[in-house]
Length: 184
Image 1 (cartoon, rainbow, N blue to C red):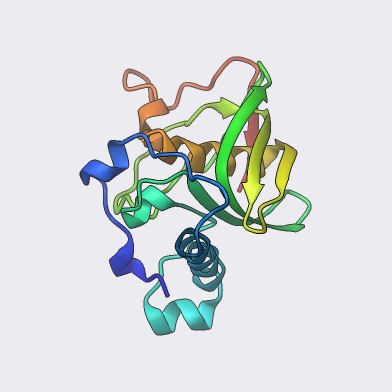
Image 2 (spheres, rainbow, N blue to C red):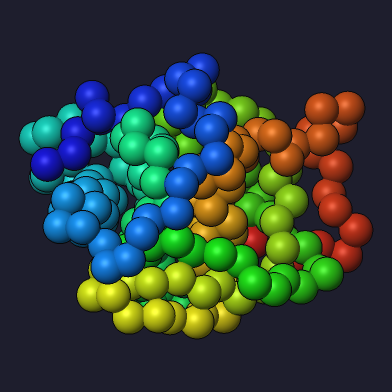
């Protein structure tokens, strides 16, 4: 089981590395790690389990956050309609994106960042992602809204990018032109 002790914090060098591709077929060790990452995200959203184990709630986790420099992400999040989505993916890649931007009005947070970082994090409003799921099947998904933002946040981790790198340092609350504001 992954706990908060397994999650590295900002300043750790692994968070700034570009993670390596996972070779296929994925090893049992990599599948187990990815499965535990998804389990953490699910457990962190359960009030009883998160309290019992001291888990900070999260909706996504990237392998570099547990000091594993491999291209793996786990996401367990609801879209704007309240539909639950669950992903455990190897080698996710954004293959196309909209010109239009979006952002969370509440800003973004991160399990590896123990402080509030105020500001608007501009993201693409719509993205298309190709990846391989934990069963070894190739997937091709189109995402928008909150899910598109979560995927971009986690894929950034695989490239050594932190969410606050996107915040305009001169004007942190400057809204991107014609962007969709998403309340969360």
